[in-house]
Image (cartoon, rainbow, N blue to C red; front, side, top):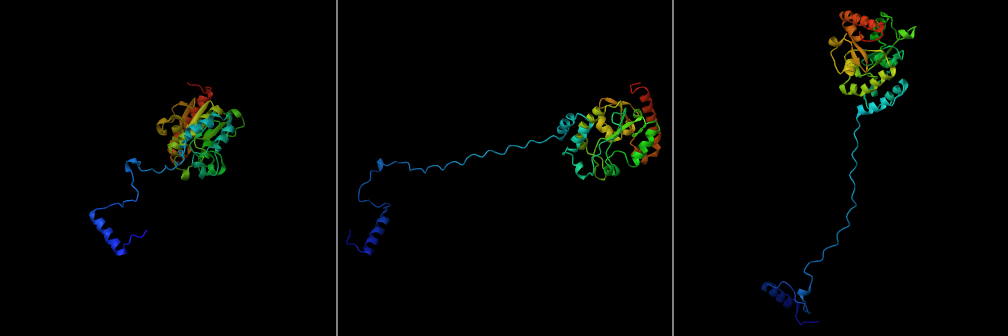
Length: 265
């Protein structure tokens, strides 16, 4: 509808209304604002995103407990060897050429437990085959024992606490020893020797929970449920030839114990 006002006049009137404080334009029809909803309409809430469950925590494996289960399930020595071969929690196996399990006569009256394989043992997959092993063979022969005897009654069974060679022949860590103790305990149970010979500090740590071979050697004790005699490791005797005198005394003590039937006395 034409109001008859030109543009400039209408603009001047509007500016005058703004200066007077007008903030709203008056509509053609009245509005009852009391009847209006005082609360502004709220937008519909967005659909909630489906809840995502947090990832389940990964159960941490206890290598020692795993070793206990595997060892306990082995019904014989061959099964124990297989269980050791499949034990993946000891990093030593990654750098080793072979699993070094045992040598000699299974079921012999004497079971010798050394420390860990060296270079020659790692290469051949048998314990005590290097210079230390050659000395051990001579020591055993001096009291009528052998890993390859003519008579089974003269045999010995030989193994190590660690079945894999540590890098650069370093000492195994306490964690590595702890992982192998369940296997060693089961090994002794299955081999069922009359006497266990613990050769060296690592063997004493695993079997007795103690180190200090110069103090422990020559004193009969118990390890893995059997009479046990700590002795110097042949590798130690190669470095310290003067200790062969004590080693000879220990061999005679072992021989006397065998003659007495392996019993205390």
